[in-house]
Length: 291
Image 1 (cartoon, rainbow, N blue to C red):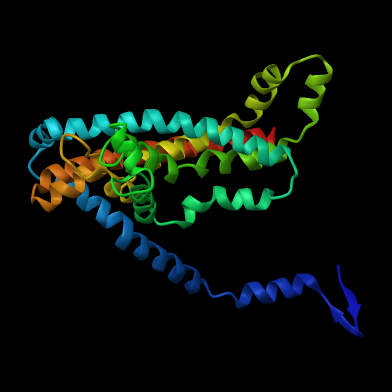
Image 2: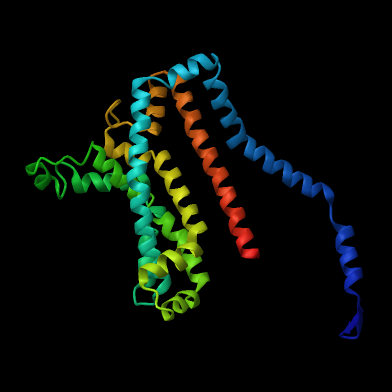
């Protein structure tokens, strides 16, 4: 189709041919090459080196490093923290997402900004904040000491730090899904006599299940890999308050490189599982959107 603009004949198809003919194929390959080199330098080569260092002495020493009591305690403590933090932040994220997505109120934007604070605050600063609150000389320190309750350099502080860092993940994944789903199905269920609990389990939860699972997976991955905040509040005591990321750092500092890289491989495996689950959930979400 052609038409006349300001007395001049204009043909869109010929214009597209000119643009296509003026493209330089080498530009595309240069950009792809730059991206590959960049990823290789900061991701692929370091990751390959971790695996190479972990298995340089064979599989026997690798599994022997994974059977050390200090390492096993670090894994156990990491799992315990995840088992506490993930359900707590899942419930909190659902409640926060429901309030934000289903209501318009004054201060809503402020509440969303507060929810995003863990994204903006350094984990080390977050850990220091907890020390200033619950430490021996902190705001609540004298009262906690009087009650013989230990928060800092113990499991409670590690749980609180991990919960603070991972607080927004579930809410941030569920809020857009709730806003997109709207109120129609919930209102229809209410008119049919369903109570709030039935509406949540039979209408709301099925609609948000993929976003919720996505948020839970991200929360779990961040809890298990958190280093900064936990290192500040834990004291990093081997066999007592040392999580898996802290074990990697301490083993490397003590020149126990094979143990450090073996633990790093385990963390990398957890990250890989997270990525696979993330990809599966994204495909499920895309299929649901198409349907």
